[in-house]
Length: 197
Ligand code: GLN
Image (cartoon, rainbow, N blue to C red; front, side, top):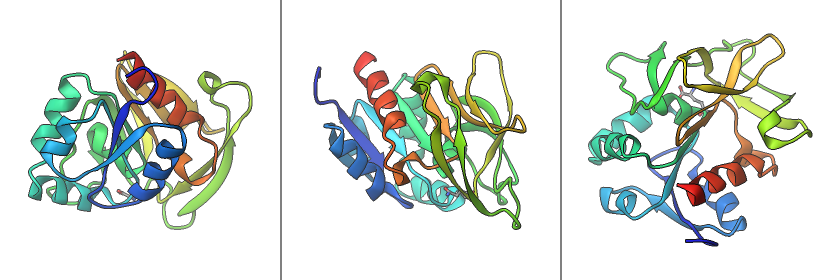
């Protein structure tokens, strides 16, 4: 698997096409994942942005929720952006009634944390693990990480200290959307984790 890891993108809902394109451009062998068989075939998975409550419903409907939990538990590298970060969080605040997550990241996230006045915004973030150049980050009805357990590494925070990127073991999550800006460093960082796994 040295050069071309097989990586899936959960393709139930949301902006999975953008992630497929970025990963393809980076030389990964990419597969849209809608079924358990497809999940079983990949060495890493991206959960895209979209709407976490819908993604949750569809993943249960498609019989993917339990296989996803098992994959996370077995150490599959998974990178969640925005709604995908919500899906990977052990605790979700302001979820809709009955909404579940896959879990894995020992964090508390709050959905739609920026309220209606600041629904969407862009800013430059320092992300030391990706090098010195700040990353331009796009937030769209984004969640924020309200607390992290010991063992979770904070990769990036806003100027006011609110956490927007985390890593724990094989899991990676960002509140924002690196698939939209042309800066592929987060996807490269994820592919390095997949290759190392
Ligand atoms: N607000 C959405 C949710 O709760 C996330 C938005 C996004 O993924 N851009 O799932």
